[in-house]
Length: 294
Image (cartoon, rainbow, N blue to C red; front, side, top):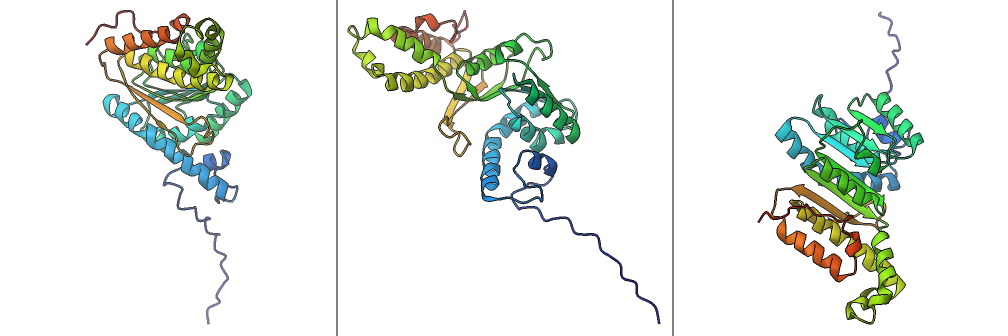
């Protein structure tokens, strides 16, 4: 009679939640606190993962557009923070495309740049770089290529969004994805000038009260940004980034370069600046010098 030995079976790998897509880095999801250390999703992390996919659905078609046209894609994420967005984009799209594509995270806080760099090395994400720069500084940095395909700036506060637009225009970006935040510069100029205009124009009633100045300033800032982009030949779509973490700042601007006619949006941009007493901000919301294409 044969002796039957007890053979211990290796423990089965924990079953991943159905929300996790095939090929996703489990280590990354844990580092981003989307998955718990034992590979589970709680209610909060399930909502967070849903938000990640929602944002990815906006950006993936832009990545595919550039990838299909060039065979590779370069993306700069401004105000990257912990580089949450860059890591997700790399994991879900870039790592499957082979060599040649690259994602740059721009962040002023050096400790976050160091942590992101270490995580990218640990995950084997070779096509990721992180630079300790402000958005404005990145425009002249030799560490970045002369042209960039896609520029993102999520919740880049106040003028950092405008600096990201300036960067994208100088780098001839094909696509921009912007979620503006805490824009106060225009409101400051409105507040400064309304005293001399309030008796002359009824329009100033729109921003006479301080709370309206802040709200109207935020609204008109994004209107001016859209006109500026259109004045440079971009097709602009404005929608809501529903379900994102910072829902109070929920406006999503997506711009794609189409070489569209520039004259009309340039005229409108200058008219709005003049009508609202914002002519001094022409250098901020600049149009091409020769915007005459129709």
